[in-house]
Length: 424
Image 1 (cartoon, rainbow, N blue to C red):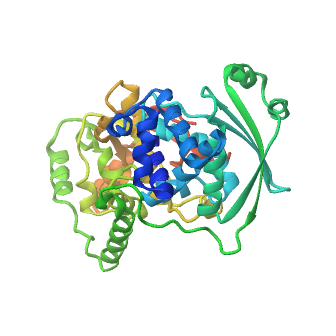
Image 2 (spheres, rainbow, N blue to C red):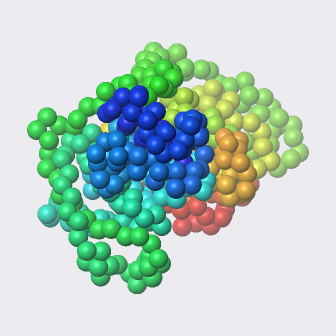
Image 3 (spheres, helix red, strand yellow):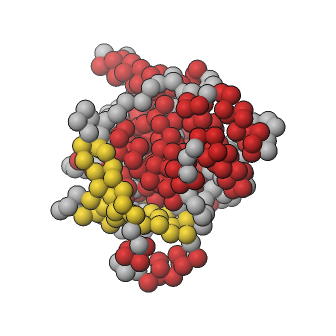
């Protein structure tokens, strides 16, 4: 497992038993220095198992109780660390969240190469408002980790108390395709029936400080993020950011009039992913959100792009969210999810080329608001007429509505990457 899980285990021990207990746990596990286990790189599973065994001994918990407590604390730690928006973006209700967990894992896999996440199969009954959950993993003994995660998600995100009853795996195998049953034959499996009821006082609140020592700037990310969002909206309301037509657009028009090159070669532009996309924890996310909040473009938006022979991807999208966005996703904004989803796509492109993951920020996109001068009517009209030719200058195109992949999984709107020039 990655060292991140050991950091969370440390925070769990210190928050419950104190710093001395953590030092004692390390010695019982055979580690002289905490750096041996807290480095955020992949560790052998035996390291995690050794730490959990020591946790059982000093806390009096059984192995399953310790694993469940670690899963529960993962959510508490994540919320304290400013990742609440990322979690809430997985769905407006607990059943929707559960159905999107595999999508969440795929996003995390991009940032943690070599990590092994479990696969969850969910059967939700909307009439009874309950779910059956099947857990599949190559790891043995970590099934209750999911139980702890789901209970914490229910309490802190959705204000419900979750009740779990283990049941035979065969009950769900009968409702699964033969192909999945064949693939899963070598995996460790668990199955549960999950019900829930509302908490009288609503979602539980998490204290803002971590038990283990964490840089102050990391703890204050959430407040900083929302402060920047509010400041941006305030400035936008008084037109501080409403700049005049870009000088670049005027220069581009002059170039077009004197050039003998095809119009699409003169007007083709691209913008780097880092200017319009961000991961949930990136400090420039608020800037990207402002870009996607409105279709109205100014000279400063056109200045985000530069002349290009081609782009890595063509992004076709809808400015207005689906009608039932709030019902399915909840309070997380459409602009917020668009910015973070585009970052995931950029990572896919980078990894597909066997590049370092950090190179995703340099992946280039053609996006209308940044690559067409929105406030230069003459040049805008010319660019609109060249859309098909711009598409041909991109290696991949996003030809359907630009919405998260989990929306496709909810069967509300399909979205897939396609070769350029092919319509859905």
